[in-house]
Image 1 (cartoon, rainbow, N blue to C red):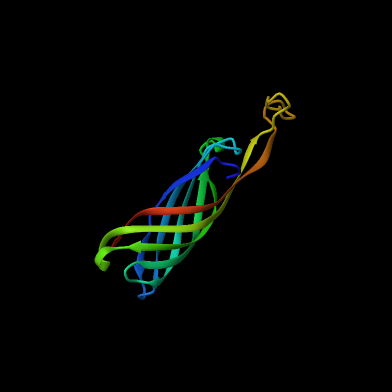
Image 2: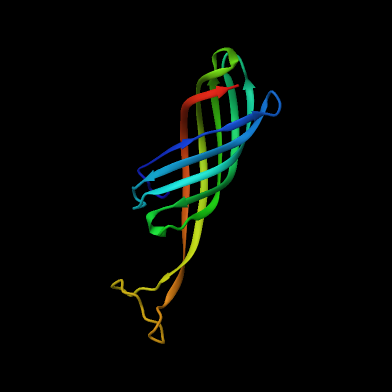
Length: 164
């Protein structure tokens, strides 16, 4: 998101074991980009599908994961509109759950990439910012614009994990 001062977020993973070493699931996330060089704040949401490969289990579960899916972004300049696109991430993590069941702690280090865009029709404006009247004098001239958002970040997730 072009020159943001910071990106903060929340995510949750719902993973289910397919085999002992392979887990698949959903990984919804919400990120907030604080104003910086971008000049605006924005919310970035993604609902990804993920695959997690477990490399070790005792005493700490070590895993790698990849995820990807649908994403959308919004900011005040879109006047309530959403920019639609995609997101993808890769990470390596560790989860410690005493006894292998119940609650524990986890940490992940990874990379997130996403792009979203939205086309919309806006009023054409002159140099002073006034709308330009149409040829009939009853309408306004319009133009098509496309807003694009990109989120590229290295992330560190730390939190609580639950294993049934």
